Length: 162
Length: 162
DNA sequence: TTATGGATGCAAACCGATTGCATCCACGGT
DNA sequence: ACCGTGGATGCAATCGGTTTGCATCCATAA
Ligand SMILES: [Mn+2]
Ligand SMILES: [Mn+2]
Ligand SMILES: [Zn+2]
Ligand SMILES: [Zn+2]
Image (cartoon, rainbow over all chains, first blue to last red; front, side, top):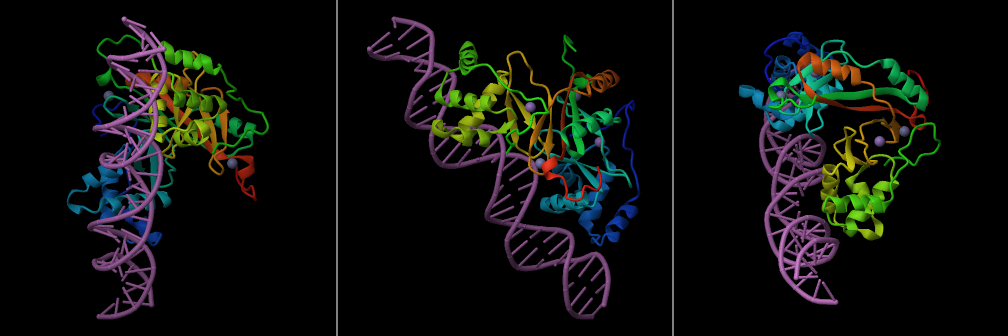
């Protein structure tokens, strides 16, 4: 789905702690270190953009396991704070492996033509969010934000409007 | 789902053009003015927050029609630019009736406890959006943004953190 | 080595949404 | 007022992503 990165004018989530360090975190929370889990983590390590359960399953190759196992493990990893779930609005969940200590909050710019993904660093002023929270008496306010557009490759032949 | 508004410290989309004006728009685009369509538009007129297909269907009352008809009509209305689709990240589409000439771009603050919705006026990430577009050569860039938190009613008993 | 509870495979179920098809009816033309 | 026609509807089947029940398996601690 997400295109391999060609040039690098944009921030990547280059990754990452070695596999052993990841499995160690599993052990520390008394989760079993199984072959499917290691394989799934390995797949996640290799991807710098959010990927779907199905994509993970397809990328397992030799260490194949049931698709349901992929789903269950991503829930587990999400609960453990090791991956973060993203929603590009197409009804399919996508996941990114997190760095140690990172809560993973960030955003993406997605091409509606070819599904290419750009990692977006930076977040609009948090003060605004806090003002919003204060104004309506909300607590623990956060947000989900994704950008969509046409990448250079997918730009219309006659670049009429912006 | 969405709670009836109690106090009013926040902007509402109070609505709206009369039903006749809405059906007139249907006529102008050579869509048939059917009972289900009028009933659906009437339901949409009465709601100031996004509602789901199922909620619309439930609110039809006397003028009941098939759920598939609701789905089809909301696609039609979306294509005609009469409603806008929103995504609160729970896998269910929600719709809001649009004012004439309004493209409907705005955001919401949703309580993760009771699903209460606050209409958010103001759109923060536009500068970031343009910078992103320029930086990565994307065109027609837009964004989806929703806020989530706990409303006053759903605030935890011991309001420890923010 | 053994016991045990978590993890997996498999298949069925779930849920929002879409679609194929026969029938219906809103509306323009007469 | 009456047709004729193509869009709209009802109904049921279907789809895709995700979840779940259950028997079996196996990673881990005793
Ligand atoms: Mn990312
Ligand atoms: Mn709204
Ligand atoms: Zn593209
Ligand atoms: Zn609430």
